[in-house]
Length: 267
Image (cartoon, rainbow, N blue to C red; front, top):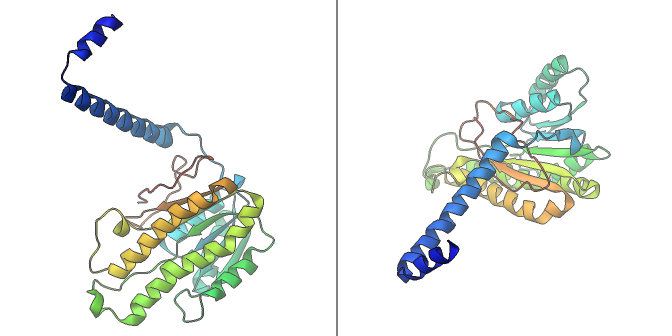
């Protein structure tokens, strides 16, 4: 039987064998991606985020995605370091979380990432805030965009420089402050909140600087994953398309030692 099949293949034109081989390789690649997706979405066991550490840092924690992360991480038993520029909102969110989860320990850090104070300041502030704590999870959520669609030459310099300070420098400095502890403990997880503006669409005109900074966040996540996976630190960038609600799905959490950078929609 095998000999007959081999003889049949040898009688076929070379171009047909070539195209058949390419088709088979393409089929295997697609099948592998599909099986990986099915496993990651439906079959992979739930990750206990406390395995990374007992504390989580969340920037931009008083509204939207950041606030949702804060509530759900408290529900999962993590203590929180909440970072925001508004002390009143920090107090409100902290009170809400403590009312639902009385055993949660909460520290707050008041800092305006768009301030003209050197961004090195936030790195020092965060290093002091996490000192002595088992911080296993960092949610880099803080971010801003244009107040309205504009051509680049129409955008005030203060507006686009604030976007660079918050989205790019702020994310980098907070990550730099938290990484040493994760390296020392050889475990940790970093979730950077990106945007579909940087990857889902080929370009995002009229929000140019915002899209560019989110492309930086995406590439930062990819590179950090490669650099620090040997330390047991998992890094991912979640690309958001709509930010009305964020849910830490048990099947979409950072899952295992083979966790790679991946982008998912948070809706």
